[in-house]
Image (spheres, rainbow, N blue to C red):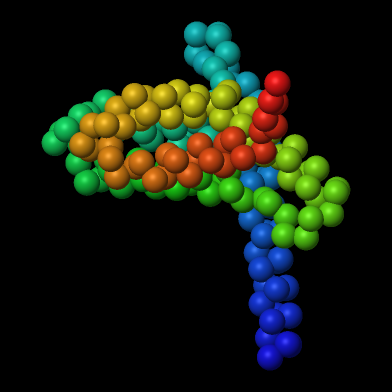
Length: 157
């Protein structure tokens, strides 16, 4: 029984470390550091994350019954991706170095969300949350807000 518990613990630690690596790979993806030149000579910015955000343009442009099942699926999948990126990386073994590294990575992800216009998507969906077609996203958006704010320090005066 103890050997099984040790295996389960080691498996959980390995999975947590793997999720942290996925988050790190996503945040430090080369496309987020490079600026692309457009044909007009101006510089366009956009990385891997902007691809996922751009998938939301069509579903968000529709309201009510005009939004198809495929649109809802796209929105839900992108919301799940964002939620999973935010919650990944919390170290199970809480040594100071791993906690600090995890905190820095989390802040880098939040900065990336700002640069890649993820917060604009949250703003649009948040403004229309009371609409019938958006109610199914309430829990996901609440989880995303929790993970965005969970490491913020509260200053009480």
